[in-house]
Length: 92
Ligand SMILES: C=C(O[C@@H]1C=C(C(=O)O)C=C[C@H]1O)C(=O)O
Image (cartoon, rainbow, N blue to C red; front, side):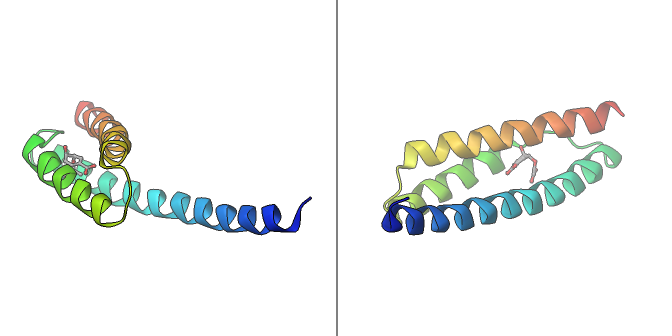
């Protein structure tokens, strides 16, 4: 394979691995949040928190030259999955 393409792909491999580790850590914490909510009778979703977080990350995306709409969609996808986990924990 072309050496340049190979080097780019090695970098992509490392970034993708970091993304997986970061997502795993995030879901570890959100799992703990879900258990806390289930035992303290708190609702699975917190739309106010979501709105603040999405707005903050849209701004960070702009600063980093990343598409803020893409960033919001990506975050929404993750948050929706977290909420599904929290609903399941609440149901027991
Ligand atoms: C993790 C939480 O639960 C939900 C998931 C969120 C997220 O993944 O960022 C944010 C708010 C909540 O709808 C929380 O309340 O902090």
